[in-house]
Amino acid sequence: MARPISEFSRSLLRLIARRPLTSREIAEQLRVPLRQAVKACSNLKGAGHVVAVETLRAADCRRPMYRYALNKELLM
Image (tube, rainbow, N blue to C red; front, side):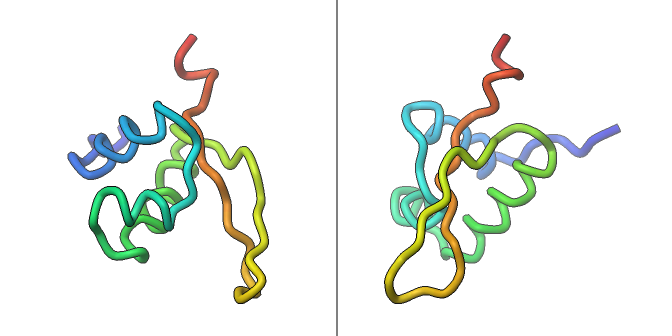
């Protein structure tokens, strides 16, 4: 049995239901540390609630950034 979704994760899901966002945009809009937003997105992706719909590259960053959206299969 999976753990229940936290209130923060519910807020994150409501936010990306409007439009796909990066973890940085999520952190800014929810006013939380970037690390918390990245971890939550990773956990929700692993659970199948969200998917990475786009991979972005920033000029000043070596790691890729992902734009997350709700998993459409769960909505059907």
